Length: 588
Image (cartoon, rainbow, N blue to C red; front, side, top):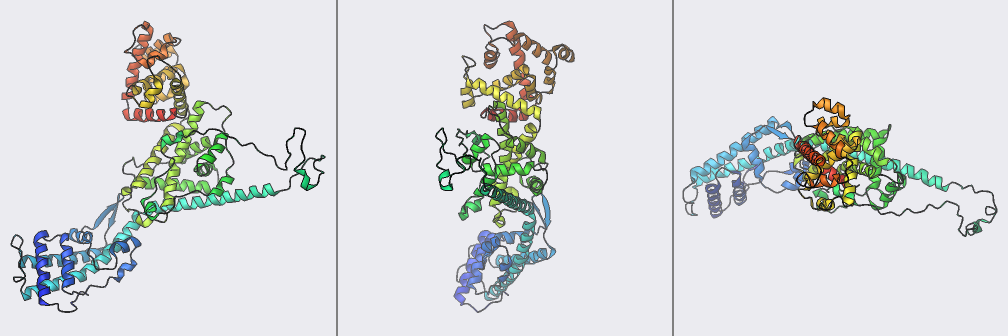
């Protein structure tokens, strides 16, 4: 390998050596010299080594390297650095000893070639002319060095790329395991949907027993034309009225209903993932709202399947879903660099969200119940977006960056799911806190729906996201907690000493020792809670107390002091709570 095939003309050799030395003077012993080495090799008729081993590489490396003679600078850089360790996804991987040995030999050949060029044309000297090129002995040495470099290059390239393929396979394994479980779970859901649909069709084909009356004694071709006294037609099967209602599209505020598609799917022109339409027949209407949304939202069937899988007490669907959740935790721990990277995703959160999503709504569902169901749907959609992403990339795994945190699409769906799970874990899994959040959101939505204060347009503040809004929010959270003890846990989760407000005035006063705090705030509120102008005064704040009674003024000042504590005790937790509260108001 790497021996000269024929002797080129003297002028060609002189020009090739001249260009190689000029590039060496420009770049020195650097991988940027490789194009000049390749050009000199071609001009000097150095026979290229066999590169048929590249056929054993994975498709991405075959496309990257091709079958032509090309020197990738990354390969030479790895040989020169001689680093035996690679950190990928937080795990240490080792380059094989054989690869390290071949890399050391390749780096020696390259440095030897550079040394010969340095002796013939030191850096900083004028570039050689065609007449004053290398002498014949020096040219022969450079030619042998190039041939030796080519032969050692292929040995190192083969060993190094195979090591990279091995390491990349191990690095992608967390994602591959999650994708495999997603495909198995989707296949099982489709199969059970098909079986349910088959049973439904067989049940519909069963003979219908009609009451024994005069209509049932008519010939078959005339039964459908028999009219009742009211003028309607009596058919063999009952006809169900079609429910037509306006379906709110406010779920888009969560920005989780659609997961970003992978770059490879976009480049290849493949159609986005569509859940099988046949599955819709297997999803009986769990509620009036769910039945209507099925015709408006393409992902409703997939949400229903996910909810059924999460609430199944036994069977393979729940087992696959549990294993998938475990694999997602492992994947999130090593790939979610911008989020928290948590791996403790529990099945209970999905189960609680699924039960709320599948629960039947009453004829007049309260605003708080609608908010609670919207939160449950948000949690399910966060996980469903991740499942859609897994399905999208199932045939594109080779094009996923093995450093998983470098895949932007994967980062987005993992961050979205982590936030959705934390929302479910914080609120849905805590019934009292969930009730308080939804109740406060419903009360604030009622304020926005009607004029609460002549000088405050609360609905406009919500639309503009004005800074004044974020001063009003903690006051309202405290106010509704004072008015209704069941709504107090929202504020108490941020300021634990507020839990004393749920006790009787005397007990809270004793616990507080008579100092300014929850007991005094409770006492002030007891004195002014029946005042009709209280809500308007709370919206305007303590700076607009002219014309108010002393009791209201004292209550507003105590309320403002407590609201500042509510915001400053744990700022990040309050910011998250206020963000969720504002989004919940859209559903109330």
